[in-house]
Structure formats: structure tokens, C-alpha cells
Length: 148
Picture 1: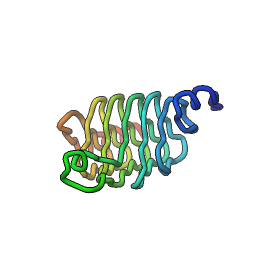
Picture 2: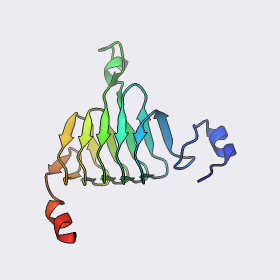
Picture 3: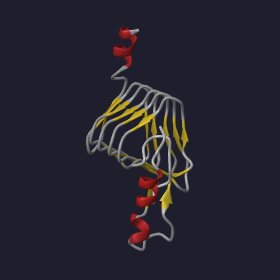
């Protein structure tokens, strides 16, 4: 998709392959056949973000390696930054936040509005819902097996 230079220049957002109103910071590793919706951000400045193949990230999603609250309060000298991984075939619903230290296993779904702020490893085929997040391990395993 060709972006119009005027939009990117006006809002000072770097161009990306998704949409002029998707913010990509740093150099995330983004797989094949990935969709990132309008007004979402992927911030990989200072840490790694890896998004596998066939992922669908809805609009208004923030994937952000940085946590500056301790620095802001004077409890740390630097912004804390941790890696984020989404394996293949992960869906992230609208208005979600995925923070540093999160690892999402393949074929998992993060339901709309879910907040993942603590380092965690979500197993494959899981459904993650809410704030605080509830992890339903293996939720999609049988459904996917039956579909095949």
C-alpha cells in the first residue's frame, strides 16, 4: 500500500507498510501476512519485538517494550525495556496493551481491551481476557483440531 507523503510528513510519523496512522518505532521483526490496524503502535525502541507470521493486530492496540513509571518517580535512572514476542497465528483484539516481557504462544487470542503489563509466558492456543488478565490455557486447541 503506497502511503501519501503528506500525511506522514504532517504528523511526523515514519512510513511503514501498514498504514500512515500506524506507529512503528525502532526495528521490530514482523513476519509475513501480518495485519496491523489503524492507530496502533509497535514500539521496539531499546528492546526486541518479534511478531510472527499470520498475526492480526486490531486497531487501537499498543505493543510497547518501554515502562517509564519508575524513572518518572525517581525510583530508577533509566526506562525499563523488555522484549515482546508474538508467535505465529496470534490475534490481538482492539484496545489492548501488550507490555514488555510478554510472550504469546502461537494460535492464541488476546481479547479486546485486555491489558498485559507484567512479564508472562502465554502458552499456545490460549485465550487471554481482561484486566487483570485471565489466561485460559489451551482454549483453542480442541477447536482448531476439530476444524482441521
